[in-house]
Length: 70
Image (cartoon, rainbow, N blue to C red):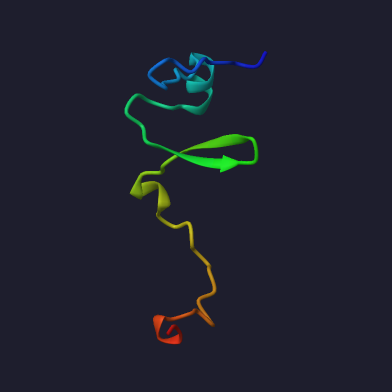
């Protein structure tokens, strides 16, 4: 079953408990809204510690530098 929510008169939406539990979202967590066609993608903003190592093994050759800009 798909979880639904209603936009309040104060433009607030309560995220259904089933979705919060499945995604492990907590109160106070920050999110970003990304417009997509006729909808919106809701993405939790990662904490700094969660970003450690995401570029491991990245090839830094031919990396653009600010010197190549006007």
